[in-house]
Length: 565
Image (tube, rainbow, N blue to C red; front, side):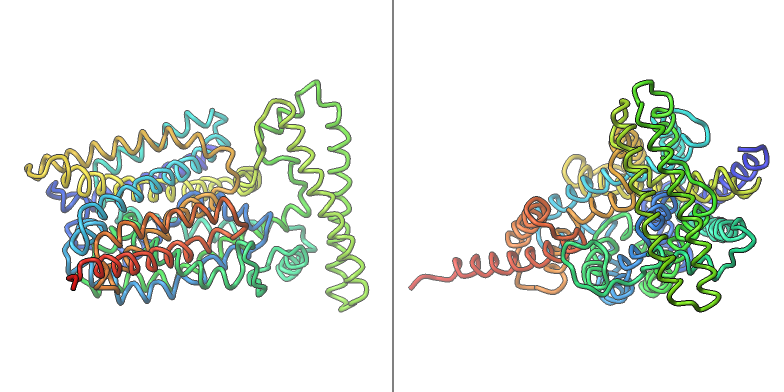
């Protein structure tokens, strides 16, 4: 990091955070702290919804995901526009009319306190675990830049996020999200431009797209239906729609965003904005990862992108196999680069036979390169490291090593700012549920508003400490973006199912809803443990089981109440 990078990074972050605190000023009440007094316009609310999703995980891990697996992850979002339209017609007006602080308050109005407490607890478990993963992502950034241990950088990010959230509440978070999206757009455009402009002079943009496609990195749509494949058109449209319905319709971190809207119409506009903008944004981020892949066809990437593990195998006196692995890696890289040049010539000459010949060489060299990377990871593990999964370091390595001064700071500001936006939103939601659904409902039912405001700030501090503690467990779980969505899919099917019962099945009673949720969660974990079903389908299976069990139990309960004789 050069001086200019530090200046840009600090200026961008200060602009986002101070603007949020300035716009978030006002009378300190629980209504302002948790729901911004229900005064936000649709554009601030809509961008806040998007920024809450676009955490550091999105930029660090999604680009790395595209680098290693192509753009097919974009199918994960294909069901989101459908979900937004459904929620605009159902959840938004119902929650607004009920005047609730949390989605789970509505469950007590519809069923009972026990169902509300169960679903609130499920939310706190899954979102509490997820916020640790979200916090670990920016720690990776600071570890790469500063070379500090990740526990120290995690602690720093946690302290900043807690201080900002506790001071400004959801209003400051929402308005800072608005500015963060502006900085994010500029940073992403700069990253893509650099990835293309840094290619050799003989490689045009069309050549780069062709090479990415030849390597399977532009596989945005997979038509084959495979229940064990995580990302295809069908899992994205159906499983992704159920996941989006659950995330935006039952997860307080998102519900709280549109409860801040001035009206039902404003909240609907915010969600519809996401329906239109989210898929293109995700496509754009994944495309950056594909272009970074092409860049590394001509600029030799490290054997392992995680520097700590790379130094481990280079320094270990026991790793006599390392020179052979490094030599094989270098040879495969040169073969791939030569084959890529051959593909460019074949494309320009429209020579189909030569294209096929060079494509076979290209694929073979890529397989050899991947094999050498796997051997390098195994060597690092033998040298005393844990399981090496360096997907989350790919984009950071490109940014910090190759982008010009100033742009490095801008892109890192995007990543760290996104992290603070997302973590702050999640902490505020966790604190709101902790106070409104647990503390106020079951511990201290009647107290002055100031008491609950202080309790919310204390809860924010608690969840910040919890996030710092659990973030360390995210180190070895692989792709962070996959991990956070897998975690959500363990719980979202059950949460979605109970709200479907509440909205559309007026004859279902509290006992059916409560036991239906438990049946749905049992089904989800059974699918995970005993089947090869891709995680997006967990949301469908869990929701359907909750609905079926809730209807059946309520029907039996009603039958038992009929008079005998």
